[in-house]
Length: 364
Image 1 (cartoon, one colour):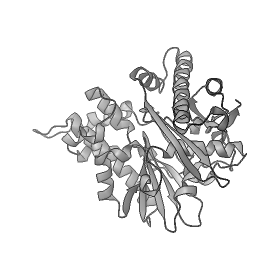
Image 2 (cartoon, rainbow, N blue to C red):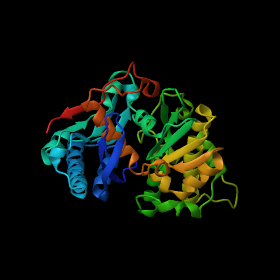
Image 3 (cartoon, helix red, strand yellow):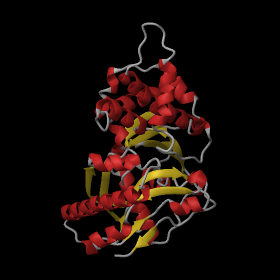
């Protein structure tokens, strides 16, 4: 799995029982080289020769996938012949389900050639073709491993934040809530040259600017749309942020300042506010929230959520799955389901016309 945070790739090697319960046998990860990260960022918007650039970036990504497959197999002392399939999500560069498309850069045929293992990929397009958002796809997986006898919410803090609401006896619900790390990472890169704000330390030097926070929360119609809904860097990017920062900077009283660190602290508060608002609006009876994704390691986000949520807050690790493994494990499960022709698409989450078999197979 390589998500919208664009920080790198997480891989897990999992064995599933007959009911789809996983056991993680090995894991590996790698960071993106800056040039590949920049290539993906550039492909979030139109530009010259983008078809060729996209194909080349997909090939580079796939070679990294193959390297991580080799690492996990070596760690588990297994051969390629012992693996049923690879679930390879690809890298999302455009997500416009309301226009009928979502684009994940990938080269599954190349991955099958490099590894000698069948590859399951292209998980989102069938749901979009059936009128769905194509995202989030993981709530059914969450339901299988995190359900309990009370209302629980899984909050994934990747580039974009999304929630899964698990109620006893009900179908899982889920949707994107807004940015998690995407805006903070881009703002940090712009002002420090670093790809992300480690543990929120740079943003902690600033103070939340309440007027900017209010403008971020109130000026974007997408935030008040009811689910099903999903989003990405197509919407929440520096071009979206810049006029809002400029608006507030132009209205500062004499002696007031709005530093880059203040903006970063405010973006952190925006992540907390948008996620909290969604949770309390659609699961007011929630008894605990499980965090996963890279944002679960940002102490500023975690502290903000603890202060805003009226329930227990812990990580998925405390429920048995490491925070960085959840998304990769979910796509291993989706590959497992596709190999068994199981329709695990969830219309109650994505808004599709019905459950669909997700993904397609490139044989070994």
